[in-house]
Length: 138
Length: 138
Image (cartoon, rainbow over all chains, first blue to last red):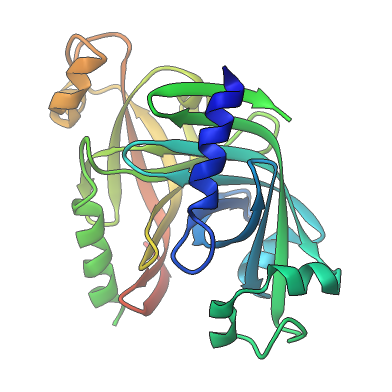
């Protein structure tokens, strides 16, 4: 049962990749407040792993080496919530692989020192798709 | 300058009220993870206060009397992030005022003991609307 809902959620995520895709990424501030803001996923592997391209800044400062995080894809029809951890990727090959065209508006290329790739790894999922619910751990 | 962006953000929020409106609400779990999930705003006052109708359950258990929270309205074109606190409303008049038709699918009426109203109060805003950014405190 959960497999079917997970497959539908994976489809929602895969349709939200790149410049026109988006989700909310929630992190915890230094003062203990949650903070949810918009980000475009760059590359995903089902509901298990999501890579994001961004610049070093306030958001990445909250992450440090690794941080607890939540990702939420939503619409009036569905909710895909993934809770887990997020880390800054340093592997140049992964950073090149995550790069997509829209990044060139902000960075000279995957080697630009300001270009940052984040890897989110799901530990728990909470899904509402096509009027069906599924919750679980990975 | 911020006033103009705040007015535009207020417009986005006011167009996202009721059954077809939605945003992500991020809370912090008992184990310290942020958790962002979808909820429909019931009533708003600009970017300052948002009321939500919901049922008592896992989400309201996270809130207790009051909790730090973040609300995010987003699309590929904009981001409206509000950080602040959220509390459970007990005033019957406010609960009646927040009630809207879609709630009748879940509750017998504003006096239904399972019906819960949450009041979110903004302390900080982070807005990106019409390619303009604004950040500040309230």
